[in-house]
Length: 239
Image 1 (spheres, one colour):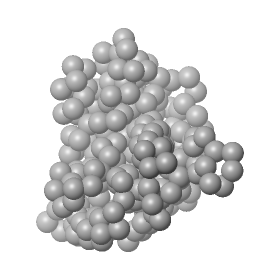
Image 2 (cartoon, rainbow, N blue to C red):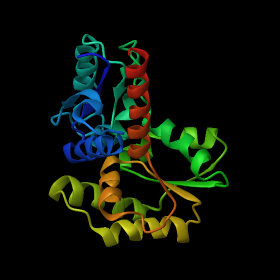
Image 3 (cartoon, helix red, strand yellow):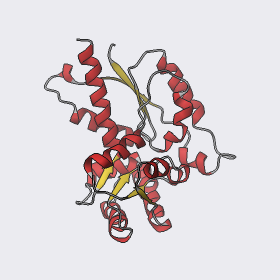
Image 4 (cartoon, helix red, strand yellow):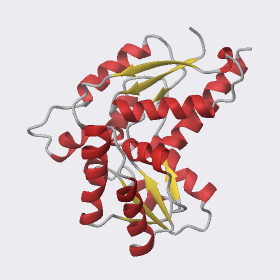
C-alpha cells in the first residue's frame, strides 16, 4: 500500500472509532477509491496514561508498548503518524525521537485552531483527564501562544473524569446534560472565551451530543482535518 498513514489508536477504542468515523465522514469521497489509505493499530491493552502520569512508581508505563508500535510501524514507511489520545502526548518527544516519520501533535493543532476560529479569544479553558491537566501538555503551549490558561475547578475536573471514565470508557454512553453542564461552567462561571476539548472521549461526547452553542475547539477534529490534508497532499504529489 502506498501513500498511507498509521493511526496509533486503542486509547480508548471508542475514541479511536470516533476519530475514524470523523475521518471518513470529512474525507471528500464519492467512490471507494477516494477514501484515505491508513493502517489502524488499535492497541487496546496499552496501560492507562493518566494512571501512570499520576502514579508512575506503581503503574505500568504506557511508553513501552507505544514505543514498540512506533518502531514496528516505522518499518512500513507511513507518511505520518496520528495519535488520537491527548494524554499520550505526555510521551510525544520520546516517541518522535524513535522515528524520522512525523507524528502529528494534537494539542498544538488545537491551540493553532483557536487563533483561526476564535481570533478575539483571550481566556482559553481546557477540559481533559487528570493526567493531561497534570502533565501541562496544553497549559504550557497555550500560555506560550499568549493566552490566559483557565484550569477547570476541582469539581469540574471530577465531573469531566466521570464523563470520560464512568460514561464513555466504561459504558460507551454519553450523559448529554453532564457534558453541557461542564461546558456551561467553563464558559459562564470561569469566563472562558473558548474551551478546548482535550480528551478524545470528550470528543465522543461532542460527536454525539454537540456543544449547545458553547465555543469549543475539538482537538480530535483538528487532528482529523490535518490528517486528511496531509494524506491528500501525499496522494496528489505521487499522481
